[in-house]
Length: 379
Image 1: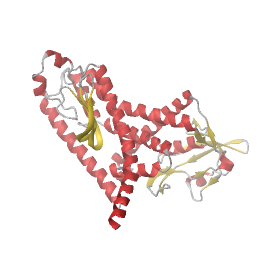
Image 2: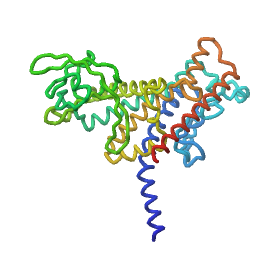
Image 3: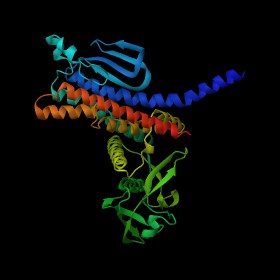
Image 4: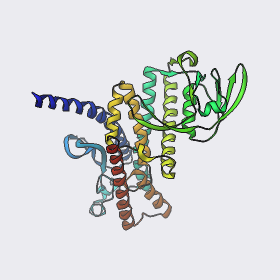
């Protein structure tokens, strides 16, 4: 009886964490690899394998073009292997290319023009950004978006906003010269400003007032208890003062929202990476599969829209990560192709091999670091 209860508990626990995690990750991986696949095929490059996951095949089929589509046992990524690739990282197999006949060489990845190879590689991260745009637009089109007027209902004691002279009832007109239409615009601007001073223009009792605020970094917790650090000024809005409401968007407006939201998240992500490199931001917020599974499970309790939004956020992060100029990643391949285009010939095999080894070491260290953050965050 106890064994049965334990087994049932473990099964329920696995479903709670694994199903949302696989849902989110599979969507992101599939569309990333689909970008590589579609542009590669459009460029006349033959795809041998399209795999979601690594390791032994669970289920699959072969299409008319000879591509093996498969779902593999380890669901932590995926790949498209083109003709002439040595492995899933698209390292050229020069020996195999040397044995190819003329027809095979016309459809192999290593023998394609540098422009076609670059387009095929870049298509993966681009697909991640397009996926995020579609998700953000689709969710907001289906359910609307909650907006509130940029009216201050309260100022936190001892906050930068209080020190700058903000008062309840102030209506924010602009921040840093940019117009503010909703309270969420104000929040986004502050989040993107870091600790740089911001000049606000507000309307107070019918007259304009200019206030300068320097945000400060604070560590806070979300409704699930997860800690995060962000710049704050200490302004609050509520239903009574801020006029929160659900705004319905049409298809074009929803698409515009999807583009702007994707751009904002991408800029925030790049900024965070830059701050980590410069030492202004802690790297302990970088997470791996365990943290993604945890957050996916938490967000899934809110609803499918929230889970899809999480998939969009992660899709942007993965797109940016893959564009880093590290060999083994898409950005590393693009860096090699840039050198090839500039030189008029590829880098030597030895240089490329050394680059891939360095890239593998860097990616491995990043994965270990992310796993360490995941594990240390659980204890």
